Amino acid sequence: MATPAAPPAAGEAPGASPIRPSPPGPDARRRGRLDAGAAVDVDARTAERLKRGRVPIDGRLDLHGLTQAEAHVALVGAVRSGAAQGRRCLLVITGRGDWGGTERGVLRRMVPRWLNEPAIRPHVLAFAEAQPRDGGGGALYVLLRRRR
Image (cartoon, rainbow, N blue to C red; front, side):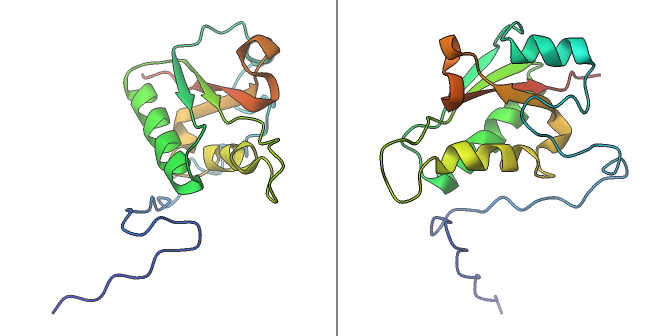
């Protein structure tokens, strides 16, 4: 006898398979929480190069027009895929969210949280707000961990 599926959580699309965080690994305590521009897992020189937009962009992800659930799935997929392909830096375009709605900048606010989730945090070394030429406050540079 099959058990009925649980109803979708708030903000989750019906029928979508939610991405559940995996349990923390043995080195989860070593990795700190990432904040924009902070150098947790990288040296100061690399962090500065990332902030200044001096790391070559290997891939782009534009989240404009996506729901929060769609954007989350797209971000997880892009980070995992980019890491598997050996990409180093992704440009994630969230948009500024200044359209005047009641919740402004939802994706801009959520992407940094999602980058800290256990499902993709092991692939992310650092992230920083993009330079104006690459989208400024409406985009992030995401530095991915190199494959070993």
